[in-house]
Amino acid sequence: MLAGFFANPASAYTVYVSNEKDNTVSVIDSNSMEVVGTIDVGQRPRGITISHDGKMIYVCVSDDDIIEIIDTATHKIIGSLPSGPDPELFVLSPDGKRLYVANEDDNMVTVIELASKKVLAEIPVGVEPEGMGISPDGTVVVSTSETTNMAHFIDTSSNRITDNVLVDSRPRFVEFKPDGSEVWVSAEIGGTVSVIDIASREVKQKINFELPGMSAESIQPVGVRITADGKKAYVALGPANHVAVVNTETYEVEKYVLVGQRVWQLAFTPDQKTIISTNGASNDVTFIDVTTDEPIQSITVGALPWAVVVAPN
Image (cartoon, rainbow, N blue to C red; front, side):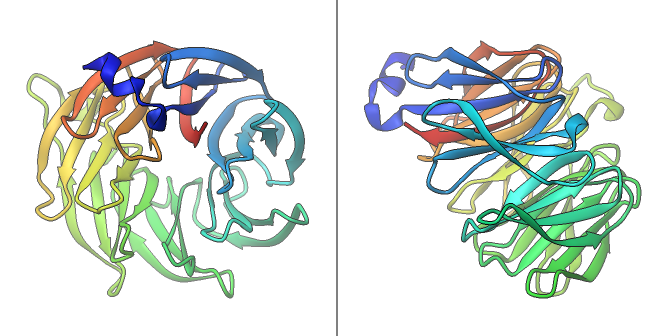
C-alpha cells in the first residue's frame, strides 16, 4: 500500500520542515520519502509558510528577529522581512499580499506588506502572542496570547482588535473552519481545544482528550488542522505523542494516531490525502493517511523539528 500510495506523480510534493535547534530547514521528497536537502537558515527557525504560487518559503527565525525568504527553485535565502522581535508564528492573507506575525517578546502582531517588504501596522495584543489564524475571506485575524489566555479578533481593514475571547491556559494555535463559521483554538496547558462561534464570538464547545494510561498533564494540544471539506480536525497533542482525529460536527474524538515524541505542528499535502506531523523530541516527522487515519512512515529530519509546510513539485 505504501508504494502504491506514493507512486502516483500527482501525489509527489516537496515538504519543508523548520528545525528549531540546529537552524536548518529539511527538504523532503514525498515520492521517495527521503530528505533530499538541508537549508541553513538563521537562529531558531519556528513558523514556516509558503507563498500561494509556491515560489517562496517564509521562515520565522526567532532569535534573529526577522523572517527569511527562501526561493523554492534554488533553496537559497533571497531576502528577509522586518518581522519585529521574536517572531514565532504567522499567517499569510488569502490574497497573498500580507503576513500577520506574532511577536512574542513585545506583545504585538506585526502586519507586513510583502511587495514592499514594509511594516504596515503593529497591533498591541495580550502577553506572549503565538497562535495566528485568518478567516477564509481575509477580513478577520485571530491572535492568541499565551499568558493572557485570550483569542484576540482583529479587523484586517482597520488593524484593530474588535473582540477578546477568554480560552483555557496557554493558547498555542488558531485554525479557522473552511466555511468561516468557527475558529478552533488549542490550549497547551489547559489541555483543550476551544471552538469559537464567529457570529457570536463566544466559545460554543470545548474539546477534551483522554488517552489510556496517560496523565492529563502530558496531553498538551498545540497544532490544529481541519480538512478542506470541514469534516475532520487533527490536533497535535505534544508530549502525549499522538494526533487526535476529531469529528467537527459532533466534536467527538474518533481516533488517536501514534506518531513521534512531542508532536507539535501539522500540515496537509495539497491533495489532502496526507497530513504530516513534526515530532520535536524524536527529531522526525510522521506521514499520516487521511483516509484511514493510520501512520504511513516517519522520517528523520534535523534537531527539534518545529513546523512543516508542503509545496507542489
